[in-house]
Length: 273
Image 1 (tube, rainbow, N blue to C red):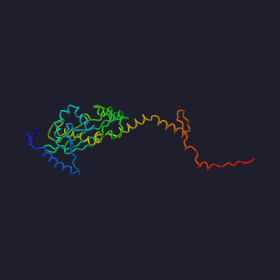
Image 2 (cartoon, rainbow, N blue to C red; image 1 turned 90 degrees about the horizontal axis):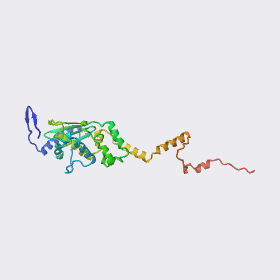
Image 3 (spheres, one colour; image 1 turned 135 degrees about the horizontal axis):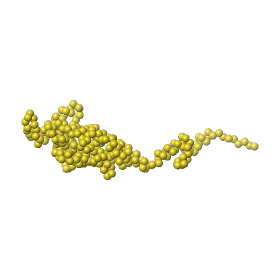
Image 4 (tube, rainbow, N blue to C red; image 1 turned 45 degrees about the vertical axis):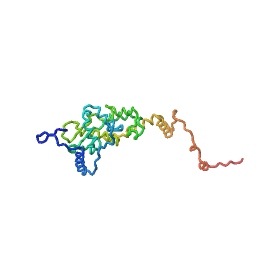
């Protein structure tokens, strides 16, 4: 239980049950959201497994958080809050996560994520060229081990380092990662389980670039001479240049004179001598 200070006096807050905290928080949140005309989007855990996340994107987010000691040591404080449904609202936007957590009061948590460096993103795109088959496969995490290694690389992958994150909570706890922030950090992973496309919104990059580079790489490997043949054909047709390496052009039925053309040809009458 946190130690509070108010008016020069230190004290423990009176005990309030989890159910009562959630009910009080829900009422306070409804008043806040009424102005923006939207409803709350709570984080709900639909299973009782020890690990909250179940998909590649959710697990990769949680694994990335836990690989850093300064975050991992404080994250367990938020697990109980998350599991009992205290994250009453969580929204992911470009470079930002905003959430409301029910505690002794309703607390607002804000997490900022720095935009992914362009050079780092280009390296990811380049290394994934020709390796991702579809958007569905990307969002489902149905990827090769090589691509998974690229995306989750600690230095050059998609997931942020602690120095790229800013954490803030309106609670009186002075800890950098309080239990409310920890609950929201885990909650992001659960949200990515359901909507993995939000991760690209959060990092401010376009997942279509991964797919376009993959398609381009696959086409160039499968048909390396297509572009050259087209260029050679155009040169021959426009400039009348016959190229030594140009592929032979075979006449098909379209190259033969039609019956109409035959009828239009002038008839030459043979004169008898």
